[in-house]
Length: 69
Image (cartoon, rainbow, N blue to C red):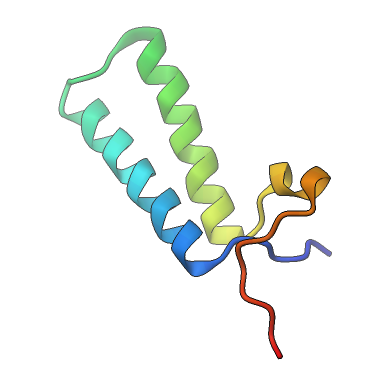
């Protein structure tokens, strides 16, 4: 089971960034390889925010999620 390590503020930033990238793409501001790379990044950001889990945080022991007391 994956231990959730993405907090609310982190989740908000990730979703906002993905929406901005999507807006740039669908607005025709980015294209080509740059668009493809950024769309992949946007998808990863959305997935990690929906799952509340970021694989890159694991090796560093990071978590932006509040710990329950």
